[in-house]
Image (cartoon, rainbow, N blue to C red):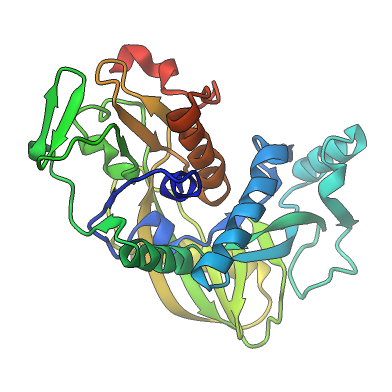
Length: 336
């Protein structure tokens, strides 16, 4: 996204990427939700990130000639009486009312789903087809000669005073957007990232017939023609892209409890998310190598945070505007 906003500002750039087929962005469901967490809080920076995400993806649809932005209503099932009380408390306080359509008590649900305690219907959510975006955007970069398709090699970088030399070129800045591979970066690898492996299933269920994004510990995302994505799991030790039978069984068990119709698993994928310990992105320039920066750590909210912080980084590079303090790398100054 940073490259897109630099392009909008008329600045020159080059994206260096080897084109890994399996990444968290490529396989992600790409969901966004204005109300998150067990306490039904408004998502972080909701009033800013959600409108900009919509504006950005609709603009990219025109540029790339591909459908990306899919608004959907969300049906969040109450898993317990305590969580239901928390949701009703939030509603009574008025903090999330702008996003709430209805509250169901277990009857009259708009879809055939098992929800004995009821559910809350949320607007303002949906998903971005992140796989389609990455494929189309990569093609656009390549066609415009903005892309070098290879792995970045640190051995080719030479720092000379305050200048960078890379293959006889002198870029003014190098910004690393490496996902969880940042932990191999010699300048940023010590930052407090907490990458998490996630696994998702693709299922087919002709008897379900649902246009809602369903949420109850797992999500069920309508894709097309009786096809749904189901996720996700969290694993902090085995950080690889290999799907496991354990995660598959976990997702099937949870799905069976809320889906009262037959389904068939037709796909299973895994990838690693670049999360951080404080659940905030890390954005900014290295305190010593001031022409080297980082933009990373979106966790599960990449589709809505990427436009916001990509735009913010472009504003910093072009106009010197400050970063959001909660995401600024300056909060980890002593770790670099």
